[in-house]
Length: 336
Image (cartoon, rainbow, N blue to C red):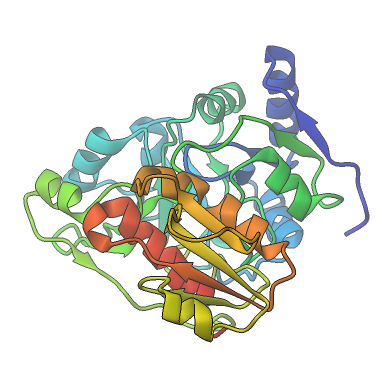
């Protein structure tokens, strides 16, 4: 891919119209959502979607999430059972992705050749305005090089994809900060969470009035068979610096760590002398704040030229976002 000029656009009405026109022409636009920034293309245009894979250097066995405005638009792409419709009416627009039997309108490149498609309706106002202006479903995986830490600001997108995409829409920092909950609804009688996010298994179970399983295993990168949904690979969301996850950053852990280590606390430490090697996800131990800060902190620590990063996992009892953070940290540290 030849070098191109990358521009960040303020969300003015004129710029939104300009970016919508670019999407209709088959170009790529990085767009903010409530979860992370996505690299959007017309989901019905196979050639445009191939540009996503090229820009991210993403293997084609990893499918894309398709963003829609509403259930009506989703129904043109997938078969929606009464149970799936119930979830959509309860949690859309919002950070919930449903894996559903696809219709023939969806190109194979979007689904990694599977007979299912992952769909969600974002709540972010700018993403929704682009969906309205284009009149199209938009395929949009995270707007970053494949496998690296996800972007939650326009600057993160620019840092990773400068010279590889033309358009970035600046919507400020993402409000949730971790990717959507993904639920496999191909068989409505056996719903399964494929990736945890802000919407909890308990909330989904209450909505469906049935138990929902959680899939906890991933598969190594490089497997030729198409994944069922994004975010399923065992190693993902990874900084370049090797990452070690611990339950608690105790004095003994810090003392045993190599000298050139960075330490990422869940909550800002108050009982140690700060030396510049310390980072934290939340000032007061709040899981929502930690999720919003997770990827920005991982990026800052990754720039610190440390030999290794040690990160403290949040207590799982803090709710679904703590579980989502721990899922991302596990994948970020896998094989490292």
